[in-house]
Image (cartoon, rainbow, N blue to C red; front, top):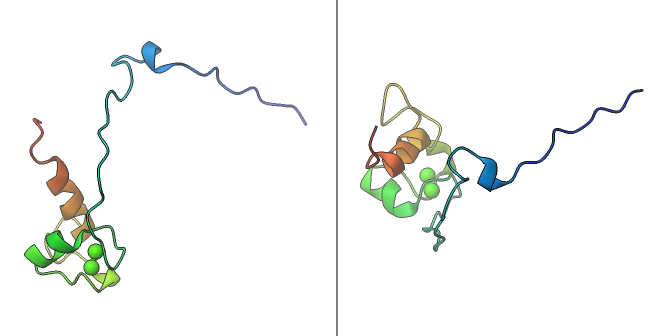
Length: 80
Ligand SMILES: [Ca+2]
Ligand SMILES: [Ca+2]
């Protein structure tokens, strides 16, 4: 068996945009059922914050699952 060498590690300073930059932390919103969608967002979009099975269906969109619709909402303010 021949050992495979790992690629050399690079520092963030070597990356084209110097890495991820400053990432602010905070308190995660309450997600009672643990489906990845916060309770407040579920309630405002007709989902059940006590049902973890409502994140995977396509109820809010023809193209995206409910959790994908939520994730897309997190970045919709960013320029395209
Ligand atoms: Ca949830
Ligand atoms: Ca849910």
